[in-house]
Length: 303
Ligand SMILES: Nc1ncnc2c1ncn2[C@@H]1O[C@H](COP(=O)(O)OP(=O)(O)OP(=O)(O)O)[C@@H](O)[C@H]1O
Image (cartoon, rainbow, N blue to C red; front, side, top):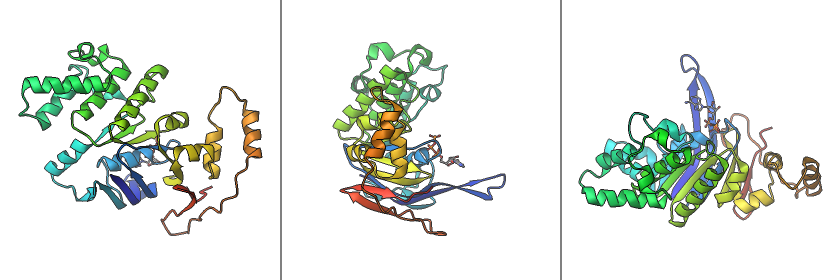
Protein backbone atom coordinates (compact mmCIF):
# COMPACT_ATOMS: atom_id res chain seq x y z
CA UNK A 1 0.00 0.00 0.00
CA UNK A 2 2.58 2.58 1.16
CA UNK A 3 6.22 2.01 0.42
CA UNK A 4 9.20 4.20 1.22
CA UNK A 5 12.38 3.33 -0.58
CA UNK A 6 15.74 4.94 0.24
CA UNK A 7 14.03 8.12 1.38
CA UNK A 8 16.26 11.03 2.40
CA UNK A 9 15.37 14.52 3.54
CA UNK A 10 17.86 17.33 3.91
CA UNK A 11 16.47 20.74 4.90
CA UNK A 12 18.13 23.96 3.84
CA UNK A 13 18.74 26.02 6.94
CA UNK A 14 20.43 29.28 7.90
CA UNK A 15 19.75 32.88 6.91
CA UNK A 16 20.31 32.30 3.18
CA UNK A 17 19.52 28.60 3.08
CA UNK A 18 23.24 27.85 2.80
CA UNK A 19 23.29 25.29 5.65
CA UNK A 20 21.99 21.77 5.47
CA UNK A 21 20.19 19.75 8.10
CA UNK A 22 19.82 16.05 7.47
CA UNK A 23 16.44 15.02 8.92
CA UNK A 24 15.86 11.60 7.31
CA UNK A 25 18.50 9.19 6.11
CA UNK A 26 17.89 6.30 3.73
CA UNK A 27 14.61 5.04 5.19
CA UNK A 28 12.89 1.98 3.74
CA UNK A 29 9.54 0.97 5.15
CA UNK A 30 6.19 -0.43 4.17
CA UNK A 31 2.67 -0.04 5.55
CA UNK A 32 0.12 -2.64 4.44
CA UNK A 33 -3.68 -2.42 4.61
CA UNK A 34 -4.83 -3.13 8.16
CA UNK A 35 -1.34 -2.65 9.57
CA UNK A 36 -0.25 -0.15 12.20
CA UNK A 37 3.39 0.87 11.90
CA UNK A 38 4.74 2.87 14.83
CA UNK A 39 7.50 5.36 14.19
CA UNK A 40 9.23 5.84 17.50
CA UNK A 41 12.11 8.13 18.33
CA UNK A 42 13.28 10.97 20.45
CA UNK A 43 12.64 14.59 19.53
CA UNK A 44 14.40 15.52 16.30
CA UNK A 45 14.79 11.92 15.08
CA UNK A 46 12.85 12.67 11.90
CA UNK A 47 9.44 11.11 12.69
CA UNK A 48 7.30 14.10 11.73
CA UNK A 49 9.36 14.77 8.62
CA UNK A 50 8.60 11.23 7.44
CA UNK A 51 4.90 11.75 8.16
CA UNK A 52 4.91 15.07 6.29
CA UNK A 53 6.58 13.50 3.26
CA UNK A 54 3.93 10.76 3.16
CA UNK A 55 1.25 13.46 3.29
CA UNK A 56 2.95 15.36 0.48
CA UNK A 57 3.56 18.38 2.73
CA UNK A 58 7.27 18.28 2.01
CA UNK A 59 9.22 16.43 -0.68
CA UNK A 60 11.96 13.88 -0.13
CA UNK A 61 15.38 15.13 -1.20
CA UNK A 62 15.85 11.73 -2.81
CA UNK A 63 14.24 8.30 -2.74
CA UNK A 64 10.74 7.18 -3.61
CA UNK A 65 7.42 7.09 -1.81
CA UNK A 66 4.76 5.05 -3.55
CA UNK A 67 1.14 4.72 -2.55
CA UNK A 68 -0.88 1.94 -4.15
CA UNK A 69 1.75 1.72 -6.87
CA UNK A 70 1.92 5.44 -7.71
CA UNK A 71 5.09 7.40 -7.05
CA UNK A 72 3.65 10.32 -5.10
CA UNK A 73 6.22 12.74 -6.56
CA UNK A 74 4.32 12.38 -9.86
CA UNK A 75 1.13 13.70 -8.23
CA UNK A 76 1.35 17.31 -9.31
CA UNK A 77 -1.96 18.81 -10.38
CA UNK A 78 -4.38 20.25 -7.85
CA UNK A 79 -6.93 17.63 -8.85
CA UNK A 80 -4.50 14.70 -8.45
CA UNK A 81 -3.38 16.00 -5.06
CA UNK A 82 -6.99 16.31 -3.96
CA UNK A 83 -7.59 12.71 -5.02
CA UNK A 84 -4.51 11.58 -3.10
CA UNK A 85 -5.83 13.28 0.02
CA UNK A 86 -9.11 11.53 -0.40
CA UNK A 87 -7.10 8.37 0.34
CA UNK A 88 -4.32 9.55 2.63
CA UNK A 89 -4.98 11.90 5.52
CA UNK A 90 -3.14 13.13 8.58
CA UNK A 91 -4.21 13.88 12.13
CA UNK A 92 -1.82 15.84 14.31
CA UNK A 93 -0.83 16.46 17.88
CA UNK A 94 -2.78 19.56 18.78
CA UNK A 95 -6.47 19.20 17.95
CA UNK A 96 -7.22 22.70 19.31
CA UNK A 97 -5.09 24.43 16.68
CA UNK A 98 -7.06 22.76 13.85
CA UNK A 99 -10.28 24.56 14.80
CA UNK A 100 -11.16 28.21 14.41
CA UNK A 101 -12.71 29.26 17.74
CA UNK A 102 -15.22 31.59 16.08
CA UNK A 103 -16.80 28.80 14.01
CA UNK A 104 -18.70 25.75 15.14
CA UNK A 105 -16.45 22.68 15.35
CA UNK A 106 -18.45 20.71 12.76
CA UNK A 107 -17.41 23.26 10.13
CA UNK A 108 -14.41 20.96 9.51
CA UNK A 109 -16.93 18.40 8.23
CA UNK A 110 -18.87 20.91 6.14
CA UNK A 111 -15.66 21.97 4.43
CA UNK A 112 -15.12 18.39 3.29
CA UNK A 113 -18.58 18.41 1.79
CA UNK A 114 -18.08 21.61 -0.18
CA UNK A 115 -14.68 20.50 -1.39
CA UNK A 116 -15.31 16.83 -2.21
CA UNK A 117 -19.03 16.13 -2.24
CA UNK A 118 -20.90 19.23 -3.47
CA UNK A 119 -23.55 17.10 -5.18
CA UNK A 120 -24.50 14.96 -2.20
CA UNK A 121 -28.00 15.70 -0.90
CA UNK A 122 -28.52 17.13 2.59
CA UNK A 123 -30.12 13.92 3.85
CA UNK A 124 -27.37 11.72 2.43
CA UNK A 125 -24.69 14.01 3.85
CA UNK A 126 -26.30 13.97 7.28
CA UNK A 127 -26.29 10.13 7.21
CA UNK A 128 -22.61 10.08 6.26
CA UNK A 129 -21.71 12.52 9.04
CA UNK A 130 -23.67 10.58 11.64
CA UNK A 131 -22.08 7.32 10.52
CA UNK A 132 -18.53 8.69 10.65
CA UNK A 133 -19.16 10.26 14.08
CA UNK A 134 -20.49 6.96 15.38
CA UNK A 135 -17.42 5.17 14.02
CA UNK A 136 -15.22 7.41 16.14
CA UNK A 137 -17.60 6.87 19.08
CA UNK A 138 -18.96 10.40 19.18
CA UNK A 139 -22.61 11.09 19.86
CA UNK A 140 -23.77 13.41 17.02
CA UNK A 141 -26.18 15.17 19.38
CA UNK A 142 -23.29 15.96 21.69
CA UNK A 143 -20.90 17.45 19.16
CA UNK A 144 -22.81 18.86 16.19
CA UNK A 145 -23.52 22.57 16.55
CA UNK A 146 -20.96 23.02 19.34
CA UNK A 147 -18.03 25.46 19.38
CA UNK A 148 -14.51 24.06 19.85
CA UNK A 149 -14.26 25.36 23.44
CA UNK A 150 -17.38 23.36 24.30
CA UNK A 151 -15.64 20.09 23.37
CA UNK A 152 -12.79 18.22 25.02
CA UNK A 153 -9.40 17.59 23.38
CA UNK A 154 -10.35 13.93 22.90
CA UNK A 155 -13.66 14.86 21.25
CA UNK A 156 -11.90 17.32 18.92
CA UNK A 157 -9.28 14.72 18.02
CA UNK A 158 -12.02 12.19 17.23
CA UNK A 159 -13.88 14.82 15.20
CA UNK A 160 -10.75 15.24 13.08
CA UNK A 161 -10.54 11.48 12.59
CA UNK A 162 -14.26 11.46 11.64
CA UNK A 163 -13.49 14.17 9.11
CA UNK A 164 -10.78 11.97 7.59
CA UNK A 165 -13.18 9.00 7.49
CA UNK A 166 -15.72 10.99 5.45
CA UNK A 167 -13.14 10.85 2.70
CA UNK A 168 -13.02 7.08 2.47
CA UNK A 169 -9.34 7.08 3.38
CA UNK A 170 -7.06 4.06 3.07
CA UNK A 171 -4.17 5.41 5.07
CA UNK A 172 -3.94 7.60 8.16
CA UNK A 173 -0.83 9.37 9.39
CA UNK A 174 -1.44 9.86 13.11
CA UNK A 175 1.30 12.20 14.34
CA UNK A 176 1.49 12.32 18.15
CA UNK A 177 -2.30 12.20 18.23
CA UNK A 178 -2.47 11.24 21.86
CA UNK A 179 0.31 13.22 23.45
CA UNK A 180 -1.94 16.14 24.42
CA UNK A 181 -4.76 14.01 25.75
CA UNK A 182 -5.31 12.83 29.30
CA UNK A 183 -4.66 9.19 30.14
CA UNK A 184 -8.20 7.81 29.80
CA UNK A 185 -8.87 9.69 26.55
CA UNK A 186 -5.57 8.36 25.19
CA UNK A 187 -6.80 4.81 25.57
CA UNK A 188 -10.08 5.74 23.81
CA UNK A 189 -8.20 7.18 20.85
CA UNK A 190 -5.83 4.18 20.74
CA UNK A 191 -8.80 1.82 20.76
CA UNK A 192 -10.26 3.85 17.93
CA UNK A 193 -7.06 3.39 15.92
CA UNK A 194 -7.32 -0.34 16.59
CA UNK A 195 -10.91 -0.26 15.19
CA UNK A 196 -9.73 1.58 12.07
CA UNK A 197 -7.03 -1.02 11.57
CA UNK A 198 -9.71 -3.71 11.78
CA UNK A 199 -11.52 -1.88 8.98
CA UNK A 200 -8.42 -2.29 6.82
CA UNK A 201 -6.83 1.13 7.13
CA UNK A 202 -3.06 1.36 7.10
CA UNK A 203 -1.85 3.58 9.93
CA UNK A 204 1.49 5.30 10.37
CA UNK A 205 1.50 6.03 14.09
CA UNK A 206 4.13 8.61 14.98
CA UNK A 207 4.98 8.74 18.67
CA UNK A 208 7.77 9.42 21.11
CA UNK A 209 5.99 7.26 23.66
CA UNK A 210 7.34 3.73 23.64
CA UNK A 211 4.76 2.18 25.90
CA UNK A 212 1.90 3.45 23.72
CA UNK A 213 3.73 2.32 20.62
CA UNK A 214 3.38 -1.30 21.68
CA UNK A 215 -0.28 -1.00 22.45
CA UNK A 216 -1.53 -0.73 18.89
CA UNK A 217 1.25 -1.46 16.47
CA UNK A 218 2.09 -4.51 14.41
CA UNK A 219 5.44 -3.18 13.30
CA UNK A 220 7.81 -0.88 15.15
CA UNK A 221 10.38 1.36 13.56
CA UNK A 222 12.85 3.00 15.94
CA UNK A 223 14.46 6.07 14.43
CA UNK A 224 17.64 7.73 15.54
CA UNK A 225 19.19 10.77 13.88
CA UNK A 226 16.93 10.29 10.88
CA UNK A 227 17.94 6.68 10.21
CA UNK A 228 16.31 3.42 11.25
CA UNK A 229 18.10 1.98 14.30
CA UNK A 230 15.83 -1.06 14.47
CA UNK A 231 12.62 -2.24 12.86
CA UNK A 232 10.53 -5.36 12.89
CA UNK A 233 7.44 -7.03 14.32
CA UNK A 234 6.56 -5.06 17.46
CA UNK A 235 6.70 -8.05 19.82
CA UNK A 236 10.15 -9.01 18.59
CA UNK A 237 11.55 -5.51 18.79
CA UNK A 238 10.20 -5.03 22.30
CA UNK A 239 11.01 -8.51 23.63
CA UNK A 240 14.39 -8.86 21.97
CA UNK A 241 15.79 -5.43 21.04
CA UNK A 242 19.14 -5.96 19.34
CA UNK A 243 20.41 -2.46 18.68
CA UNK A 244 22.18 -0.80 21.65
CA UNK A 245 20.05 2.33 21.20
CA UNK A 246 16.78 0.37 21.26
CA UNK A 247 17.92 -1.54 24.33
CA UNK A 248 18.75 1.70 26.06
CA UNK A 249 15.46 3.31 25.00
CA UNK A 250 13.36 0.34 26.09
CA UNK A 251 15.13 0.11 29.42
CA UNK A 252 14.03 3.71 30.08
CA UNK A 253 10.31 2.87 30.01
CA UNK A 254 9.17 3.07 33.65
CA UNK A 255 7.65 -0.15 34.94
CA UNK A 256 5.39 -0.12 37.95
CA UNK A 257 6.36 -3.56 39.18
CA UNK A 258 10.15 -3.28 38.84
CA UNK A 259 12.84 -0.95 40.15
CA UNK A 260 15.47 0.57 37.84
CA UNK A 261 18.10 -1.66 39.51
CA UNK A 262 16.06 -4.76 38.62
CA UNK A 263 15.70 -3.61 35.02
CA UNK A 264 19.47 -2.96 34.77
CA UNK A 265 20.21 -6.36 36.28
CA UNK A 266 17.91 -8.09 33.82
CA UNK A 267 19.43 -6.25 30.87
CA UNK A 268 22.92 -7.27 31.98
CA UNK A 269 21.83 -10.90 32.52
CA UNK A 270 20.07 -11.11 29.17
CA UNK A 271 22.78 -9.66 27.00
CA UNK A 272 21.61 -10.75 23.54
CA UNK A 273 23.68 -12.67 21.05
CA UNK A 274 26.08 -10.03 19.74
CA UNK A 275 25.04 -8.52 16.42
CA UNK A 276 27.59 -7.22 13.97
CA UNK A 277 26.00 -3.86 13.24
CA UNK A 278 26.44 -2.44 9.76
CA UNK A 279 28.77 0.52 9.50
CA UNK A 280 28.23 3.92 7.93
CA UNK A 281 30.74 4.88 5.30
CA UNK A 282 32.18 8.39 5.37
CA UNK A 283 30.84 10.41 2.45
CA UNK A 284 28.13 7.83 1.68
CA UNK A 285 24.56 8.75 2.64
CA UNK A 286 23.21 5.21 2.74
CA UNK A 287 22.19 3.61 6.03
CA UNK A 288 22.62 -0.15 5.66
CA UNK A 289 20.63 -2.63 7.75
CA UNK A 290 21.22 -6.26 8.72
CA UNK A 291 18.48 -8.82 9.29
CA UNK A 292 18.69 -10.43 12.74
CA UNK A 293 15.42 -12.37 12.61
CA UNK A 294 12.55 -12.75 10.18
CA UNK A 295 11.62 -9.20 9.18
CA UNK A 296 13.67 -7.87 12.11
CA UNK A 297 16.44 -5.46 11.06
CA UNK A 298 19.04 -3.36 12.82
CA UNK A 299 20.90 -0.36 11.47
CA UNK A 300 24.29 1.14 12.17
CA UNK A 301 25.37 2.40 15.55
CA UNK A 302 25.57 6.16 15.08
CA UNK A 303 27.19 6.70 18.49
N1 LIG B 1 11.21 22.91 8.04
C1 LIG B 1 12.38 22.59 8.60
N2 LIG B 1 13.50 23.28 8.28
C2 LIG B 1 14.69 22.96 8.81
N3 LIG B 1 14.89 21.94 9.68
C3 LIG B 1 13.82 21.22 10.03
C4 LIG B 1 12.51 21.50 9.51
N4 LIG B 1 11.64 20.60 10.05
C5 LIG B 1 12.37 19.80 10.85
N5 LIG B 1 13.66 20.18 10.85
C6 LIG B 1 14.77 19.52 11.58
O1 LIG B 1 14.83 18.16 11.15
C7 LIG B 1 15.07 17.29 12.25
C8 LIG B 1 13.93 16.28 12.35
O2 LIG B 1 12.75 16.99 12.73
P1 LIG B 1 11.34 16.27 12.94
O3 LIG B 1 10.35 17.32 13.29
O4 LIG B 1 11.07 15.41 11.79
O5 LIG B 1 11.67 15.37 14.20
P2 LIG B 1 10.68 14.62 15.20
O6 LIG B 1 11.30 13.31 15.49
O7 LIG B 1 9.31 14.61 14.65
O8 LIG B 1 10.76 15.56 16.47
P3 LIG B 1 9.57 16.03 17.47
O9 LIG B 1 9.12 14.77 18.18
O10 LIG B 1 10.26 17.00 18.37
O11 LIG B 1 8.53 16.66 16.61
C9 LIG B 1 15.20 18.19 13.48
O12 LIG B 1 16.58 18.41 13.71
C10 LIG B 1 14.50 19.47 13.08
O13 LIG B 1 15.07 20.58 13.73
